[in-house]
Image 1 (tube, rainbow, N blue to C red):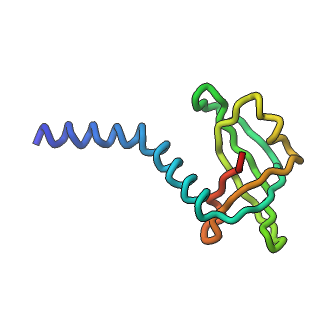
Image 2: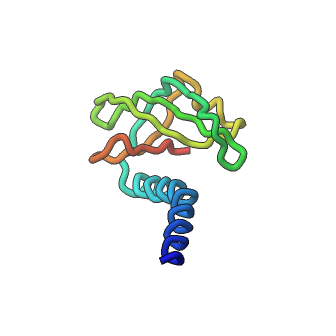
Length: 110
């Protein structure tokens, strides 16, 4: 019983640490493969205070225009090198992909 508890505790701890990056990668791959191309205007960029590979993780709020011309809001959280931060300033236009059955699952194509 004690070994089982320790095993489950360690397994849960590892899932907390590695689960989020793995799920983020799986979702991004799914959107990359099955997503619809669209254009989006950056409305806001905000630093989350977190870092990934020493790059700031930011939340980017977008107004997406789908291929039919319909607009809807979107939001992407991603690590951005300070060198490329100017690409995501309010008013700039970026290429995105989103899942048609779940438009909140979106990536910015770099």
